[in-house]
Length: 430
Image 1 (tube, helix red, strand yellow):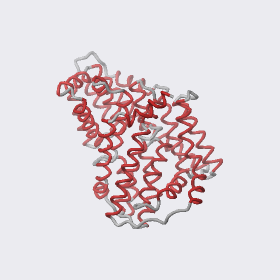
Image 2 (cartoon, helix red, strand yellow):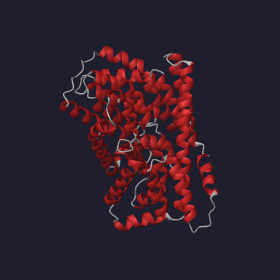
Image 3 (cartoon, helix red, strand yellow):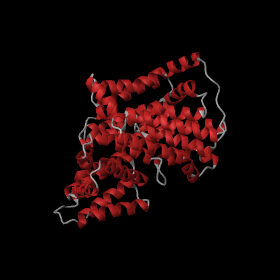
Image 4 (tube, helix red, strand yellow):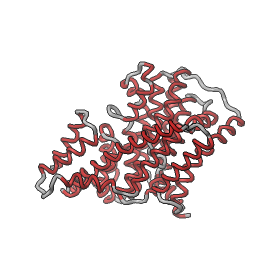
């Protein structure tokens, strides 16, 4: 049953069947070949109950908040602030893209949204300053990986619901790995920019920095409000999403006055469509994962991996390889929903905290979004450089240094607990 479910899933994905549909069909095939007394209606029942969850309501709220702030002038203000901070360094525009992506990731909670919002502005600017278009696209795609690691994060919400852990704790634990990834990506930009002979930008004055900081202050405050409110017990993660929407409307419409009624309608429609896609993936993935749990397939896989070795380093390395491999084919939400029931008993058996397990999964799947051939971030970046006649293959070549840096971050986060858990323990001890 397990071989048929996983084999058919991989086969259908290779034939370009949409991920959510492939997962649902694989679950139905599992029921057909199963010796368990299950009826086909159980798939529909599990799909409904999986999305009938109050914490999942945070997903459309954060999607909408990110869309509003992306269209409401937030992106260009974050870019202006980053420019005054690091624009004069080697690869200045590339560094601005990474830092602005980190800022925007703390608002949107989505990788593709971060690539589109920041890359849409920065890619033309980089090409105009002499950056090769493929390199500019790769920088934008690499910076987009910060979208789901720096909180708030939609995959962290999903994992929190599936694993039954605090979403607020997940958000706090994601700050350290997010900053580590941002630094690593910036180093790649500096090194590659020197090899590409990219010209540097003029140094900005303190007054320019102060003015840019004032303009972007309202955007920078939003993550503080969200995390502070959640951890201070003022509101739940779902309520934080609603607060983020209201705050983003006030900032974009009332303060910045850059979001009109038509654009607001377009943002709502786009957020609704994206949310429906995410929820479809969640629904079918939950029915799939429920089946592998009921059939005790997850227990068999856990026992098999633990029989190979009980060395924590070996187990963690195998888990990272599995997650990176899945990231080539599957979307972040699907990976978390499919393998969390399998990996939780394996990693808790070697003494790992469930919060850290979630962070490892989120970081891995984020790097998966720049791993060819089906990387979502690369597809978005390819759309941004399409007018420069740059193929997906050329971007894939330029993304390799960023991919290597991401893998190094995965190894560090997986084996040095304090990177993710240090700040969380400090906050809890206060």
